[in-house]
Structures are given as structure tokens and as C-alpha cells.
Image 1 (tube, helix red, strand yellow):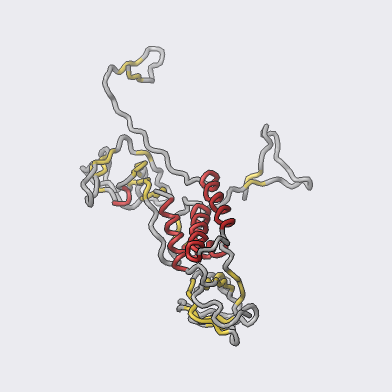
Image 2: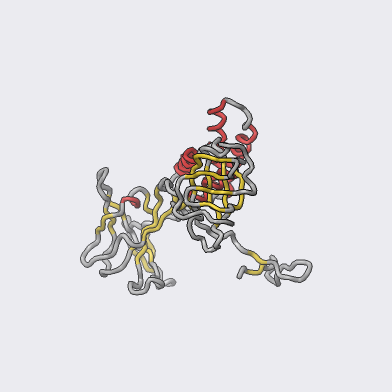
Length: 321
């Protein structure tokens, strides 16, 4: 349930004119796949049309209502199955395919094979060949690479061992380790009670070799949580997932901009200059409005000398002087 919004003096709740309480709800985190990203880029490009299939198979889509275009109109385009008619998210929902042929008389698109047959009432979207699917995927991955490193958390790679203070770091955490935590309780996956590991450090290694994480001695059997930054992997299959730390627009807008520029370069036309200018502005604006939030770095404390002094008036405090 969203939280009601308090007045500035916290004396009561803001209400609508009808007396109902104004609610506050943050935008939820959602998981987006390459399927979602490719479809949203194509939709932003203005190249898609949606419809409801009347029948089909694993290699055909038939829509006798909306598909009135001439023969071959959709050839080399793309089809996305947006929703399975059963409503349970079953295949082929979430799958895309390329179009090899379109026959106007039968309203049939011949497509690359899906994992399940298209059925009547499945909702779909189709796109013309003007920006091929492989180009959209390429531009999405370029946008992901341009983001730079994004946050990750690893809670399974390292378990403490008896009489051991050095551990091989996972390769992904080698570049930019920000935080190290340890379980306070090792027998309850839902109550780890993570605590900061003090004064950990990384012993660097040669290229291709794993560096060593150096920590204080702990009892055996406790997981370490590593919070680090690393480059986002490329997305190559429809089910590949975009990190939830990345706002969707930080990928969609740059990819759309790159696709418009690709079309302009390929055709030599200036028809998309207005869209190019608009998406350049959106790309810069979203960097400010939706930054990628990165974790804070652990502090490392080092004693550099001097006397430890306990002041009489503050007996529970120790000062470095």
C-alpha cells in the first residue's frame, strides 16, 4: 500500500477535493529483457504496427483484419509476440522473429521459427525492414557500453575459511570493488544481518590472474558480499536481462538516436534531422534526470602514529593526537 503524503508540518495528510487521501508511490523497479528493449526502440522509431493474430504456427502469423498491405511489404522486417492469448505469459510471448515473406491474399507473414505456435488472439507488433532487428540490437548494446560500469552485488563467490585471510576475487569484481560485507548469521538466508568488513584491501595481480582480497580472520562458513562496479554484459538473446540499476531511458533514447543516424547515413536523406535533434536533447536530459546510482565506497582507516589519549571528562572516547 502506498504511503499517504503528510503536509509539510506533518500535522495531517494531503487530500483531494473529494476527501480521499493523496498517496505517494515510487516508480517500481522492473526487469526488462532484450525483447522489451528492441520493441520499445522500434516503437519510438515509429516503424511498428500492432495487431491481434487470427491464427498462426511456429513459422507463420496470420491477421485477416489488420494486414492489408501489398505483397512483400513486411519482408525482412520483425515481429514481436507481445502477449499470449492465454494470459499466463506462455511462449511465444516475449519472443521475436524476422519476416521472410508476406502474402497479401492470405494475410500471412512467414517468420523465423518461434518456440511455440502463434494462436488466435495473440497480440503482436510488426516492423518494416527500414531498421533491421540486428541493427537495433547493435545500437542497444552500444548504448549499454556507453553507460560505463554499473553496480553489482555478489553474495555467493566467497565463503570464509578457517585460518585464512586471503581470498581470490571473482574476475568481475577485480576492476572496482566498493564494499565488502560479511554475514553475521550463516544459517538463515533471509536473515544474513550483513556487517561491514573493516579495512579490507585488494592485492593486485598480473593481467589474467585473479587478485586477492585481504580481510581480517573470521570463523569458517560465512558468505562475503562484494559490492562492485563492472561493465554491463552485452545482450544477445531475447531473454537477456538489463540490470535493474539502469533506467530504461538511458538505453532506449541513445539507441533510438543511433538508429535515426544510421538511417540518415544509409539513405543520405535529411528527413530525420528533427528526430535526431530531439533525441539528442532527450539523451542529455535523461543523464541528469535519471542517473545510475552507484554505491558509496567503504572507508579505510589507517593509524599513522601518535598517542592514544583518553580525556577525563569523556572517559568512553579515545582520540588520536
